[in-house]
Length: 337
Ligand code: SF4
Image (tube, rainbow, N blue to C red; front, side, top):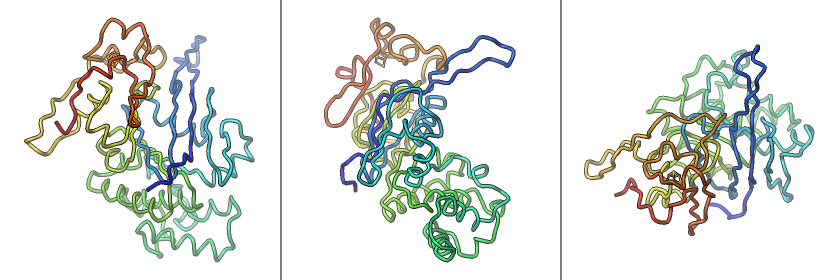
């Protein structure tokens, strides 16, 4: 499926936001939204990024396409033949590179301008990037609408005339109209009815084949990510805690947080036993994350070392990584047990 050369390499990426409780409050706090995240994505691959709300996964996606300026770290993107560091690019350089990196947002209701027809929405990015003649743009719009399962006569209609699933198809068409190589899909099916989710996931897979796309697929639902991803990175409080090939992660999770996420997936087969793990306590604040292992206040395997010493993301072999002091010895429950 992929030619095994990274199109994207993220190195020790950090993004902190400075916030105040209210406008009269003089005291500022720092939200450590992402704190030292590293991974790569091969050309043609889908990397799933999963975790609870507020874990920093959306910030990772937005920082990669430079909607947010990173606090530190590097994002190397293989543009045509050269690798470029997106973190240090000027606005003009970024505009050129953005043709090759696009984002699909969660909410198809707010991501499409309600005053524009579908034809104008899809033509606009090509005008901004000065692509093609008028006739060529029209031709590309019609073929992209067809590729996402919409009809040619939809060009004259407005977003409010379509269902949520159709709007997300249009948003996907808009993201792909410039023929990008990397697409960040930020919770692209979370706002859709369950019955529509599988259709949109299948569409994304078909489009990946047709256009040779690479995906960073962000979601909070591990079963959705499983459906589409070659590898999965699990995030907790601004850090990646586990990264593995999808089948390996589900066969043998190596981090207690992954085990807990997995236990929340409904299993339709009564012969498969999976005990639901209720995480202890609330999600800690990214303003003041716990010492040592950030997961330690909620981990059922916690030991003395966990609250004082931060675990590194260790290479366990076979492309599996885990940030737990006891990954080698814990026998965690997998969904296939
Ligand atoms: Fe749990 Fe300790 Fe492993 Fe953290 S390092 S996941 S607290 S066992």
